[in-house]
Image 1 (cartoon, rainbow, N blue to C red):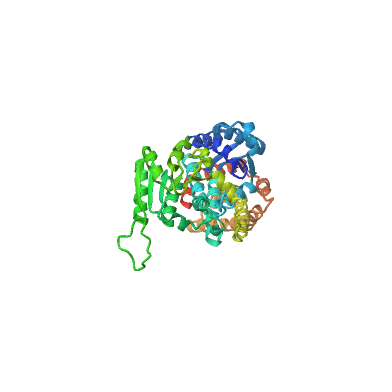
Image 2 (cartoon, rainbow, N blue to C red):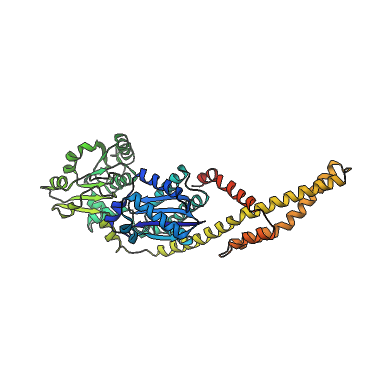
Amino acid sequence: MSILVVGLSHRSAPVSLLERASLTTDSQIKLVQDTLAAEPATEAAILATCNRIELYADVDKFHAGVAELSTLLAQHSGVGLDELTPYLYVHYEDRAVHHLFSVACGLDSMVVGEGQVLGQIKDALALGQELHSAGRLLNDLFQQALRVGKRAHSETGIDRAGQSLVTFGLEQLAAGTAVESWAKDRRALVIGAGSMSSLAAATLARVGVREIVVANRTPARADRLVEILNQQHGPLRHRSAAADAAPGVSARAVDMSALDAELPRADVVVSCTGSTGLVLTADAVEAAAHGRRTPLALLDLAMPRDIDAAAHRLGGVRFVDIETLAEASADAPMATDVDQVRTIVSDEVAAFGAAQRAAHITPTVVALRAMAADVVSSEVARLEARLPDLDEKQRAEVTRTVRRVVDKLLHAPTVRVKQLASEPGGAGYADALRELFDLDPQTVAAVSRADLNDTDGVGRGRV
């Protein structure tokens, strides 16, 4: 079996197509379930972010797998296969592993080095485990991707190579002015209370806005975010010895129905909801921007978009969206740390491949040792029948001796075959072992099935 990924991202497709192809949570679940039901796939997982949709599967046939996964992506995204196909990319086996590890490290992000994708990979793994669609291979792959991403961020300065989409977006709005100076004393409206909106609110509080209003369809989530903001960034009740201590931010929650009233009061608006329709129309933005002394700053991080694209053409508005960020980040300087991360990724891909190849031979080795144990038991039983006068102590010593002999004879070959199997091109050693020792293929398959059935118990504790 082999890892296959079929997907599209900001690197392969225009933002307008990504917008149309975006998947709801229910659509992601159905896509994973349908992939698992398809003939070429035995495992499946979906990684869906604001700027990528990737379907991972463990397949036994490459061409059939590509055709099936592409068709399923088209069906569930609502974009015709003929229109979608030119923008799809395909990675297989080691290249698929390399791709996911690069994504986990932020090398494939719109803004190089951003770390939010790690949370999205973790969510993809959790969904695969919840649906029981991620078996041994994809569990191992996604958990290792999380470890590689964390290693890249802890061992290198990849964080300096780029900022999160929120920070980068605010820098674009500030247009060359330091974000802290630009944001000072401004009023902010954050639409949505999910992970990206929460990050935006925390970032705005950190850079010095005076007030944050959170609007969300679920009041409890908005209230919770406001509570956190006031606890962590609220006004200082007791000013420190430093005369210029920051006054902190005042946060409050409102219902989505209050947007029309809050929009004209805001200086900066950040929107990232899961809505499938527009949250802010061009007319609403134009009315809010009318008569302002400074431009109304809009940052749309949603996919599909929350704010009408026509807002780009309005006077008194500075508008940055995912498409704008994609264009701006193409010219962002690459830090030297990127080379270090690429080295880490290459090393980890090689290690993952070696571990998977070694694991591939394990059922055969286990079956060999099981056969040897059966031979020992059979021969000890025959000996006991021929020498019935042996006492318990003698019988136990003979049994231990025979087992030690068999273990010593098998030790070096099994250790060596695992080493050989872990090397590139080592897949054939399992077949050779089965042939040499005339192992029952059904026994080997039974060991493999038992190993796969244990996935739920082993996978989750390692994230």
